[in-house]
Image (cartoon, rainbow, N blue to C red; front, side, top):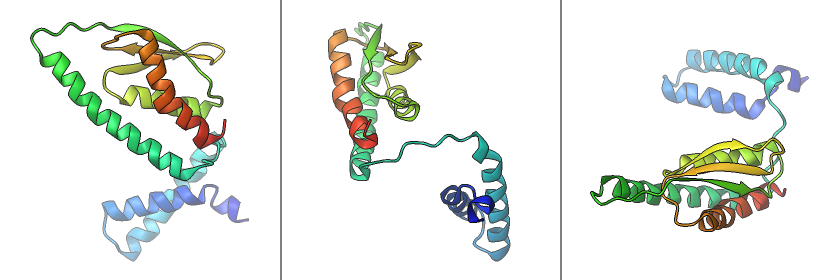
Amino acid sequence: MIKCLFPMPFHTVILTLVWLFLNDFSVGHLVLGLILSIGICWLVAPMSDDHPKVRKPLRAIRYLLVVLWDILLSNFEVAIRVLSPNSSLRPGIVALPLDLEGEFPLAVLASTISLTPGTVSVDFSEDMKWLYIHVLHMKTEEDVIESIKQRYEVELKEIFAC
């Protein structure tokens, strides 16, 4: 019964809280926020897949901190490379062999790579075993592959147990 009324209870609460933070904390806004949140969740619930559960939440927090640190460092590295007068960029495409399984962990990996300045996820192979990445400045293909596997893929395998 509750699942019929609130198909996505966590999302309903989060959307309602966001609504209240963006507006006033009043009974009227609470009721309107709940109505809108429930309506949005009813519309979205049939389209959402079951995402894998986070098996190790502390590793997920650590992963987030690593990604934020990498984004910060990469911003400086890209700015220095682009703004320096003697910049010699070596762009390239890297084929990253994937050990991850599942659409959601793969999407998190591809998003992480695209969020980090200097790299963009281009495409997955049809069998989802390779991710093609554009790199702004590539020393060697092996360095790029090793870095992504050690910093991101190993962590995601632990977080999602896949």
